[in-house]
Length: 109
Image (cartoon, rainbow, N blue to C red; front, side):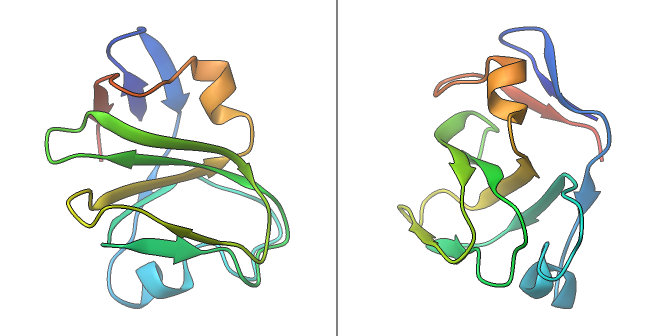
């Protein structure tokens, strides 16, 4: 489960940690969105996605550094490499959980 501790809301009921190849493939070619978390630097792409997603980029203390709502397929998103934890979420997750920059996120993996 992923909780927004600052707002006491649920960001995602179930989150799937990804590493190695799972990180590379992410949500590509999936039919439905799911919540995933992985470590990466610099950015991600949404090539081969079939749906928009929400993104939350966390700092090393799990504080929200960046939010991106409704990122459409075939986009490249780049950020400061000092942030390395990425939550790829179903569209509208940020809005529903009222998550914004500066919020503290609890990751129960």
